[in-house]
View 1 (cartoon, rainbow, N blue to C red):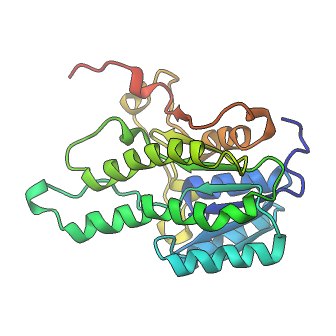
View 2 (view 1 turned 135 degrees about the vertical axis):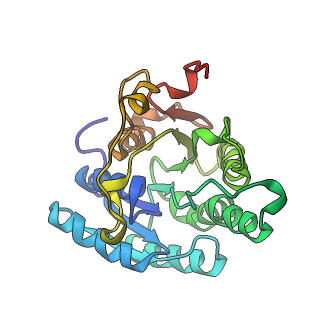
Length: 260
């Protein structure tokens, strides 16, 4: 990928106000993209704009709850009015807290809400972004999944189900959008430390033990920058022969056998 590939490319990142989404927003903006972030958290969105401006980068923030069809439709209308086309859609928005307690105590409203944001949201965004993506030379969609799509801790039913569904949605979209030339891939992050990438009221200084780091063959916890670098590649023309795939980015954690 050349240093100028993203110059004047138009990129939309959902859930872009905090965490991995904010890390990707900074990376794409630095690479020259016209970067739009959307988030349900208005406070985080405004802070994100200010933070990236301090880094010398300009992004646009648009409030949106990706589980709501009319809000997604309005979001893409605004993007289309400003940029006429969309080169890259990154479906990152999601409810990230995976634990819901024992199955017999689970509130089904929680399950429904998680799937609405984590799975329905990416589908809605793809639907309404498609006319704009189809106008681009190398259009791409990237879904942010999770290693919890294929491995679990107890009592994480909604999150695991939503990310497993997102894996399937990724390859389904990839084989369905061929006429529009849209490549669709996913990344599955493992343990990514986002403490320093949260809005101010929720920011914290990370502390990781030797045991935490030792769970990863690379010897450290992941950072948003690790996901951002992969996103820059997968959404570029250099990944033009890659579609329908999921790249696991977890420092090797899911391939290490741990006996306890």
